[in-house]
Image (cartoon, one colour):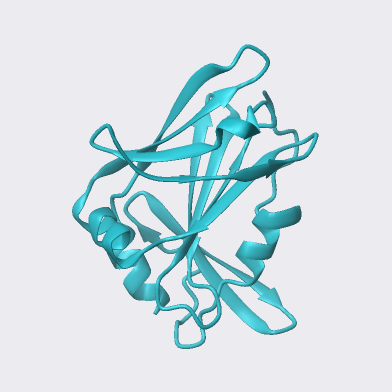
Length: 164
C-alpha cells in the first residue's frame, strides 16, 4: 500500500479538483499553517489557486491526502481525498463525525491511487467548524476489510476563512 511518488496534482479527478479551486479574493496561503491543515497554492493558466491540505502518514508512507477548497462559482467548499489503490469501490466512502455518518460518496481508482471528492453542504461545513475530528471509512480489497482513517478538523475554520 505505497505511494512511491505522491504529488498533490498528478492524476484524474483529484488533480482536476485541486487545479480548479478558486481563490480570487484570497492571498497566497502557500506554506501557512492552520493547526492541522496546511495552505498550498498552484499556479495555473487561469491564475493562482489555493486550498487547504492535510496528509496522514503511516511511518514514512502517505496513507491519505485530504484537500478542501472552493471551486469556481461555489460559496460552499468541496473536499477531495487521495488514497491507496486497494479500495472496494462499490461500497463507496463514508465520512463520519462522532461515529455517525454525515455523508457517503463515490470515487475512482487507478493502478496507483484512488481519488474521491464531494461538494460540502452548509450544514456539513458548520459541523466541521464545530468539530475536532472526523473519520473516513471504506472497504479495502481483496477481502473487503473495513478501514477507518482519522481526519483532523482542527484549524479548518481559520483555513477556510483565509481562502475566501
